[in-house]
Length: 96
Image (cartoon, rainbow, N blue to C red; front, side, top):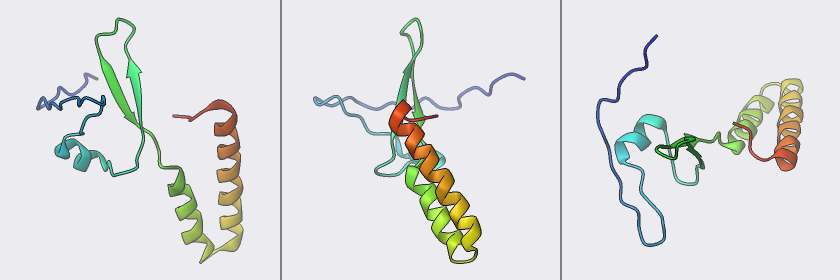
């Protein structure tokens, strides 16, 4: 299967502090919000930089809280999984 070609080219400007703004169209399409983190990946030939959206570590906690209101056993399992993943991240860095 062939990758879908980009329909539009979007640009942003780098500030004096090496910061940039994500174009609003991309932010809306991908659900990017304030406080979210991006992982920057370079190609081997340094010709392309890709930004990958990192998962929100708090989202799992919010999910566990919503389930806890209905099912305490399932919430306990989610909390244990969340803690296990956080321990792994502290040792190895973010996983994505």
